[in-house]
Image: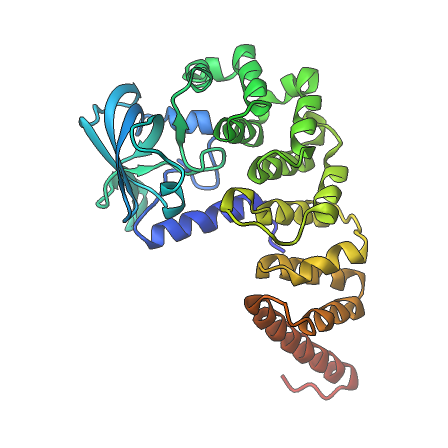
Length: 350
């Protein structure tokens, strides 16, 4: 498995897919660093605007009437046309008022150190905690954004208290932003140690919390247990052992990223899981989850991995893409075993 955190890997995959259809996001202003969401929203080259949604274009665009400019060095046009992912289109309502962050610039493909105007036009910002940067215009959102509008404000107790309220509140986008601040803003660790650990644990272990929020908090806690608390291991085991393998009809409830983060955290800390808890994920419709389960089973015993794969392939209800992956994976195992035997016998000529 990669040494990079799974959340960042998932984000990069998302951004790669957006770029492939002409989208992009200024999620990192320096190579190797992903900015906390509030800092990114108030970055000088980005725009933060309150506006009313006037058009939903099926091609992947939203048009807003500019009502109020909250941040940015440029004055946006009266009608702001921004590109978005297809999944965002189904989350918005015409006539509703939103607060959104966007960028009209991108890295120069010929010189990554330069920023140029995006020829595809403005795009919603997408980053950890901003997936995307689109919020209902509510007093709670306004309070968090106002408090975090400056570096000093972002480090204040008021902003911390508002983030804890947002994390425990009913707005999934605000929860996501708060989790992103915790994940990417280690400077709030002291405040978490003083009064925030129990809130973070409660939200992270609540199955009703959006999976992306839980994933961010569990990963953060596994990397910084002194700041967030030492509960992450039990939470990650709960995720792997109790989350249903399938039956998710819509994207917001899809637990794939959450389970991957839990498996990754447990693996990095060499924490052993019961084989039965891993075996059931071999059947997952997501081949990445199936692969992670196989790799974890192999660490316990290659025989366990082979048995789980054989049992899964014998199930007529196994998802087609998983069947294809497992067949390919089994062939790779056979080749690996053949080479190891040849090396042992001294007949390997590769």
